[in-house]
Amino acid sequence: MAEQMDVAEQNIIAVTEKEFAFFDSFTKKHGIPWSYEEKKNGILPLSKSYVGYINTPTRTITLNPKYREIGFEHIVRMYLYVYGYHPTDSASILDVSEAETSTDVADMFIKNLSRNVREGIVRTYERKTIHAGALKGRVNYTKTYLRILQRKKKFVSTTVSALSLKNDINNLIMSALMKLRHISKYSAKALELSMYFNGAEVNITDGSYVLGKINFNSNTVRFRRTLTYAAMIIDQLSYSDQGSVVGTDSFLINFDRLFEDFVVKVLKDMPEKKEFSIWSNKKKFADVIGQDGKHDERDYLPDLLYRYVAEDENYDYSPSAYAVLDVKNKAYGQFKNADIYQILTYARLLHSKKAILLYPAFCKKMPDMLSLDSTVFSPETITACYVNIADDSGTDFLNSLHWFSDVVVKTVNDIPI
Image 1: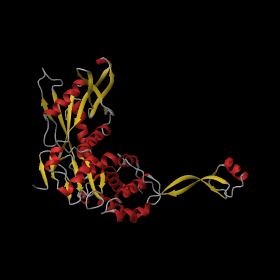
Image 2: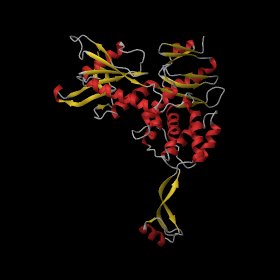
Image 3: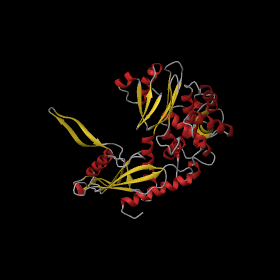
Image 4: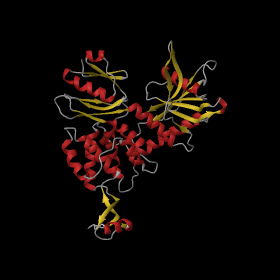
């Protein structure tokens, strides 16, 4: 049997006896189901939504994007747009780089960081309270007087500003380096680079959140790619000590989830009128009742809503949305039955006039429509809109996003495109 097979929506990995303990730990760590029958047959089916690599004790398994039209560099660009891009930034930041075709994000991080270290490290002023033997800084005279009475040698209590390495940029870098020190391939280089950032904090566990908080300027913008890789390492890279090789690493991005976050950000941020919204929590729509009464319930969580009303008086103060939208990372298969049933259920629960499915594409593509029997279904039409994710230049990429956003808004409002 081949080591790795490409079957429909899955990559089938043939697991050897030497890799069994590794994959048993790996699947548990990543929450990936691995049934008894699959273990018995020595196979591990992995969804094609995963992009990255797995280093087992005996080999490296590469998981490429499920679409041949794009590479890992387009995934990195999407991640950067979701977590690190601001509307005031230059479009060139979103250019696809040929240097990012590898899925080895740790190697790209080390190379980018090494270049940035040679150009200088970011230091910021930090205010801190100290005790001194002379007046300086912003003196707290009350505490100073008390210290004089106590005959303290350093009697002045004052607040001063000093250059520090403790800032979000360095903390993100240091947290990623500390993770890489557990991996044999990168431990020496990570230790060497971490010496430049001694004093920065290493307690970041949500890299994408911290990356999104950073406001880059002309002096720090060169760190953007480095920090994007750092955030990906903190959030997505794992390591294992199983097997004959100590400190193997694996890096997985859930492309389906990233695409959903990407589309949501585009439609929430780009339209002039901010009428798209999301829910933070699921809402119940049914109870499961057995002989002993209720024992379970069913809930739902649409990806996007347009003109959402939490308590609509027109529908007995139940929630409503003029349009319900669902994101599907299925470039080769639109209007699947399961997706149709799902969005029609959402539309019925929210009294929606419009139902829209959002798909990836690799060029500018006009919407498609699915016409339903109006005597049975409401809404009677489901529209598919497409966002081009394959542009190479940042300028073209942003233009495609604006066009997609405009098409969706016009589709919802029955405006000709």
